[in-house]
Image (cartoon, rainbow, N blue to C red; front, side, top):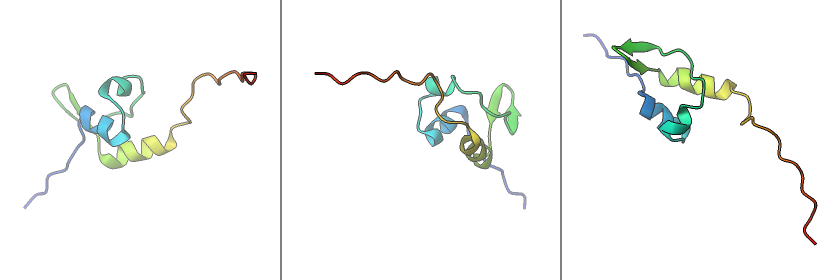
Length: 69
């Protein structure tokens, strides 16, 4: 008997990372592990390894502000 392999959808990847699908669109995801038509799928291990290897949140550092007096 064969076993089915489970892949995460785009929505499930967003849920796993704790962000919205819109926020996920701002990230450069790894290549999908599977394609069915135009639908992409990732192994959870692929996403977890990719997320662990990503650099910090990035963006410009905030300017320090003088204390309010």
